[in-house]
Length: 300
Ligand SMILES: CC(C)(COP(=O)(O)OP(=O)(O)OC[C@H]1O[C@@H](n2cnc3c(N)ncnc32)[C@H](O)[C@@H]1OP(=O)(O)O)[C@@H](O)C(=O)NCCC(=O)NCCS
Image: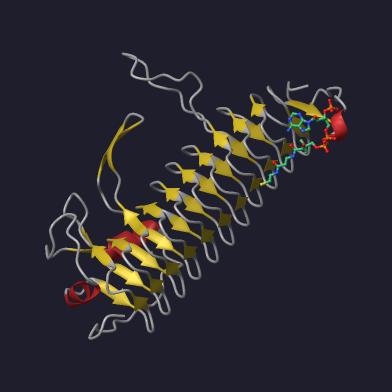
């Protein structure tokens, strides 16, 4: 903590909902310009930093209390939190007890720009990093993200707006997780995957390295009068996908199903089944081709 920084009561943020937290954190005075960066001491003097005991904020870390629309929001840093060198923490971020935001992390960045039929105005939103979360160096976390207790977010991860990550999940380095994707508890992601917008990874899903998930069926791109139909894939509880696999729009990988490395999965994989190949087909382990049953999807 920089010398002379006043301690302020911080009662933890893990239990608050986004809406409640946002209301609590919005303040009316216009102390700082939209996007202006300030140091911890200045933010605390303005009453916009709630700081727990023994939090350690590197002197080079900066804070951005006002979003692009000029809305000013408090920032909450829990007891024992460590904020590393050159970290950027934005308004309405709440970092729970003993969490870490390592060097060059950005937490709570408001989304600004156009994407998939929506204009994002740069509005801030409550960003909740729960107790004990480790955000490794170089990670960018957009506004509205929630990360559950004990989760580890690997180096250079990108979590776009309103992504939720459950408890005790591990994201290896460099995954890109698009808007509103939902990642459950106890999930393991090896490095380098792309999780498309609104994709669901239920609890205890395992992803190998470099998996691609797709939510656009037809690759509609700037065609007059046509909007893409975006249907994200879904991985049910305990599903596993091998490295380099590609999962197309709307596909459901069933509970405890397994997708082989390098597969292109075009249709649903039934619960408990193993599917691999291009396109993926359900097979017995060790190479046998399976006969279909009426309940199974049309992969066979
Ligand atoms: C799909 C998988 C589970 C199959 O394992 P298996 O049942 O032991 O399969 P085998 O090694 O006995 O191979 C059986 C046949 O399927 C083929 N095969 C195996 N995996 C394949 C795959 N992913 N894609 C295409 N063909 C595959 C083999 O070449 C073999 O064909 P053959 O009989 O003509 O020689 C495994 O190969 C796999 O892909 N595991 C994923 C591992 C992974 O990505 N881990 C992530 C680490 S981060």
